[in-house]
Length: 199
Image 1: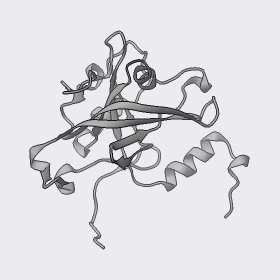
Image 2: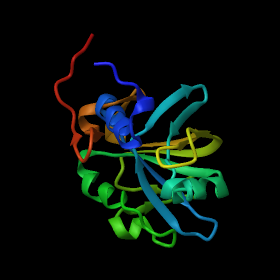
Image 3: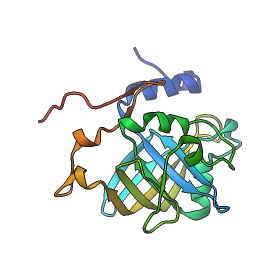
C-alpha cells in the first residue's frame, strides 16, 4: 500500500509514525520555571545524537492548535537547563501520571509522587526513582513543521553530568537486564525487554 501523507489527517500521520517507529525509549524530562515551579513530562520522540560531546534530543509538540507551547519547552527556553531521566518498567504508573495536561502552576513531582534529586550542575532536579539521569544544558531549539497541531520543536541538549546507579554499570557498559527500560509502542501500549538477539 502506498500512502501519501499530504492526503492524510494529522492524526492519521501520527498513527502511522508511532505505529511504525517501534519501540521508542521514554525520556522523562524534568525542568524548572523561572518562578521555581517544577515540571516533569514524558517524551517518546527522543534519542541520542552525538557522543562528542554527549548530546540528546527530544521533541515537544505544540499544544492547543499551535497557540501554546508545552510547559517543558517554556521552562527550557527560560532557563536553558533540564534533566532527562530514563524510564524503567517500575516507573510506568508514575510516568503516565505526568503525561496529563496540567496548568503551568502544577508541580508534576507532587502529582506523580516522584522524588526530586538535587542535580550537580544544573538547577532542575533529577528524578530519584530513575536509575539513569542526564543533566543537560540547552544547545538549540529548532521549530519543526507547522505552527498548529502536529507541529513540534526539536530540543537539543548537551549532557553535562551522568548519574548511573552503581549496580547498573561495569566499565561504562549499562546492564540492560538490570535497567529494565520501559519502551513506548502505539496508543497506550508499552513494552519491556524481550529476548536478546546478538549479532
